[in-house]
Amino acid sequence: MTDLAQAPAQDNKLSAAFPATAPAGEPAPAAVPQPYLLFLGDAADPGYAKTALGLRDWAGERCVGEYGLPSARVTTGLPRMTPAQARAAGARALVIGVAKEGGHIAEAWVPALLEALDAGLDLVSGMHAKLGDVPALARAAARTGRRLVDVRTPPARIPTGTGAKRSGKRLITVGTDCALGKKYTALALAKAFRARGLDADFRATGQTGILIAGGGMPMDAVVSDFEAGAAELLSPAASPEHWDVVEGQGSLFHPAFAAVSLGLLHGSQPDVFVVCHDPTRRHVLGLPDFALPAIEEVIDLTVRLGSRTNPGIRCGGVALNTSALAEAEAQGEIERTAARLGLPAADPIRGGPAFDALVDVCLR
Image 1 (tube, helix red, strand yellow):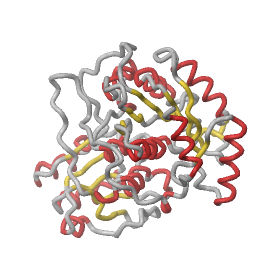
Image 2: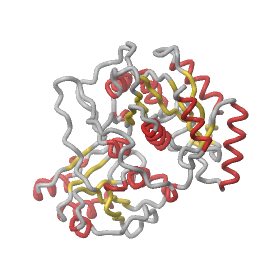
Image 3: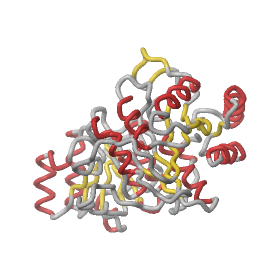
Image 4: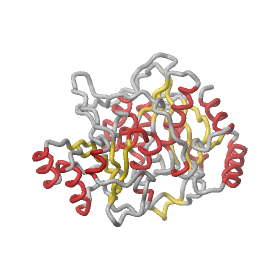
């Protein structure tokens, strides 16, 4: 995929917004307040600002600006604003657009978050830690009447998976690792399906996707026994021609995060999957002792495990994240990968005929 700063502006019809799915009788969560001011904290590496960058690229019309601590070295390229300036420009919420390892809210961020509450902005977080568990934020929210919105909160009483066949068509993105383009690929495919006149929804499974789509299921916050059931709720029975394009999570080969990947695979029962891969990455992100699996290994294991709930599962092709490569290098990598595997390969953000061929095979 091309560098995020070069990603094309997207229209706002790439998916139908849908509420976070909940069992019958469960109240739907209140809508996330928008437009957004994107909070960059003290982030020094773009890899930790996926939420801010994803919102900029796929929901840019809902983002008025960015706000960060003086030590922040990451930027979305949006106007730099204080919370008061953003509120005057129409923002209704400050979204924490960065993540710390472990999903906690850094103590150094708290003064800036308090400033946002005092300026009249609600706070929105996709962290594992809850905003209301920070005493200073809880007190300030009560004093100002502002909302603390945690989108990484699954609905109550999720059932266990049944494995029962559901109508409709489904595609899921899977990866050789974490953080290499599964969300962007799913968004690009959903948009391409809709551009061809198909009834298609992007189904979000992580905090950034949920903020982009307007709802979804935070799979990594679901208790393991209910992962498959949560995926079944996320992508319910639909008309035979309807496509759900499911955002993948983690990797079946990841030493820490394979559980969520397997539950999502079983519960979504995909007819088609697309393997996402960064050709410049050699080992699992953050775990240098674990080599990245080959794409062929991912295809084989995904078919073997996915066929448990959908015997007809097949690989539609490969999405390559070529953001670190020049145009000629990227094109060569795409062509070599397609020739080696006998499957279409493309960078969904670069687009072009290679991506059109990937879409063709996914829909075959």
